[in-house]
Amino acid sequence: MGVYPEIEPYDHGMLDVGDGNRIHWETCGNPEGKPAVVLHGGPGSGKSPALRRCFDPDAYRIVLFDQRGCGRSTPHASDYDTDMSVNTTAHLLADLERLRGHLGIERWLVWGVSWGSALGLRYAQTHPGVVTELVLTAVATGSDAEVTLLTRGLGKLFPAAFEEFRALIPEDERDGNLAAAYNRLLESPDRETRERAARAWTDWETAIASAPPRSVPRYEDPVFRMGFARTVTHYWANGHFFGEGGEGGEGGEEGVVLRDAHLLAGIPGTLVQGALDPGNLLGTVWRLHHAWPGSELLMVDDAGHNAGAPSMAELLVAATDRYARGERAKAPETE
Image 1 (cartoon, rainbow, N blue to C red):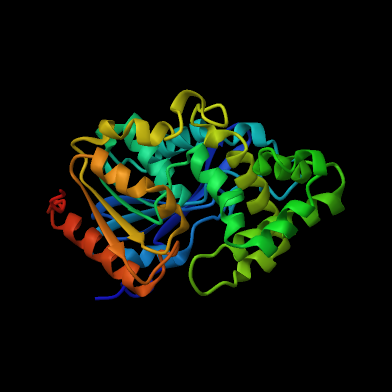
Image 2: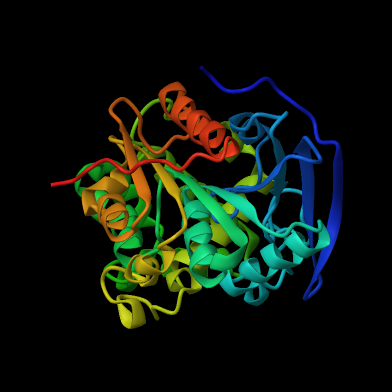
C-alpha cells in the first residue's frame, strides 16, 4: 500500500522551551492512539505535512514540531539577530522532553529522516525509557566523516559544482573545514555576503542530490534558504554538538552515535535506506544495523536520500503499521 490520505492537525500550539525560543507543534490522527513523534531533517528543514501520511491516522497520535530556528518556531534562524548559541543538540533533546511532558505522553515511537534520524538515535541512547520503537530513513548519524563526505568527498563526483562551491570561500580556508568556512560567511555582518553564501550552499546541496528530482523549490524561498544554510552549517561546523570536537575527537572516526549503538539494545528499530544515498559510501547504516540488536535494515534499490520516494514510503508505512499492531520487526539474518 502507499501512504495514508492527507490529514489536518486536530491541535497545535507554541511551546516556550526557554532561551527566548518557542517551538511550533501539532498533533494529528487519533488522540487516543499510539503516540509517535516525527523528527524532520536539516538541521533546519522544518516539519512537512507529507510526513503525517506515513502513519495510520486511526492508530496513531502523530506529533510533529519545528525544531529551534526553523518552520513556524521562533525566533527564526534567517534573522541575523537570532542567537544560534542556544540551538544545539542538547537543546533539541531537552525540547523533545519538554514537548513530551507538555502533551502528557509517557512513551512514544520516534520517527526520523536524515538529520532527524541522528537526533532520534541520540535521543533513544540518552532517554531509552521513553522510546518504544525507532523508524528511521535517509539515515545519518552526524559524524565528522559524514560531513567531510558531503562537503568535500563528493567533490570528486561533482567536480564542476565543487569548484563553484569552494570558490566563494577565502583561498586560505579552502583546504579546511568547509562547513565552518561557510558558517563564518553566513554569520557575516554584511547582508550580501550572507545571501551569496546561502545561495552557494543550497546550490551545492542540490548538485549532490543522489537521485531525481534534482530541483528543490524551497531553496528559492530566501527566508528558508538563509535559515536552512545558517542552521545546517552551524551544526556541521560543530560536530552536530555530539561532543566530537570536530575532525574526530571524543567519538572518533565513527562518531558518537555509532559508537554508542549498543545502547539501543532492547529498542526495536527499522532502517529504510535508499541504495543510491551518498551516505552509503561510508557504510554507516550497515554498521549501525549490525551494532544495534533488534534492528532491521531495508534497502531500496531505486531511491536515494529521499524518504518521499514511493518505494521508500511503502516500507515506512509498513513499519509504522506493524508497530501499531504491537509487532516487532524481525531483523534479517546476517552472515
